[in-house]
Structures are given as C-alpha cells and as structure tokens.
Image (cartoon, rainbow, N blue to C red; front, side):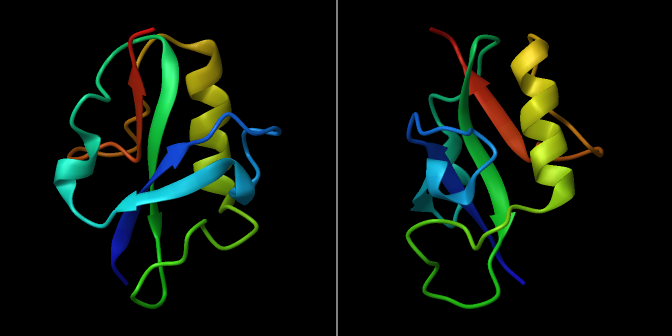
Length: 91
C-alpha cells in the first residue's frame, strides 16, 4: 500500500483522523516540516489511490502513539531507521 502525507489542521482530538488533511503522496510534502515544536505531518498507509481527503478512521494505534509521544517530546517520531512517520515544525 502507498503512504501519503497528511497535515495537521488544528482539530481536536489530535489523534482523530478528521484532524488531518491530505497534503500529498510523495516525499516533497514534508518540506518545511522539520523542527522541534508543533505537529506538522503524518505518513499514513492508504489502501486506494487517489488518496482520501482525510485518513481512514480510526488512525492506527502506532500512528496514535507516535502523535501522543510527539506531543511531549521535542523531536520527530522515528519508529524505525529511514523516513519518520511524523514530522514536527518550529513555531
């Protein structure tokens, strides 16, 4: 399955799928999203293309854990070596 980037839209709760809007399905979507402060984008598997406007609900437990961890740390969530599944940006 392909992964797409979804940008945080300020909604609450932050772990709800509706709090994230489609940004794109390529790596260029994360430009400008590297910093320690606020949530920026998440990478989510999408079962079909074109990708939906918001991720399918509910977000996976792993993605929810990455979001919750990122809220209390000052770094991007990197679950494995390679591209992080969540990026933060400077305020």
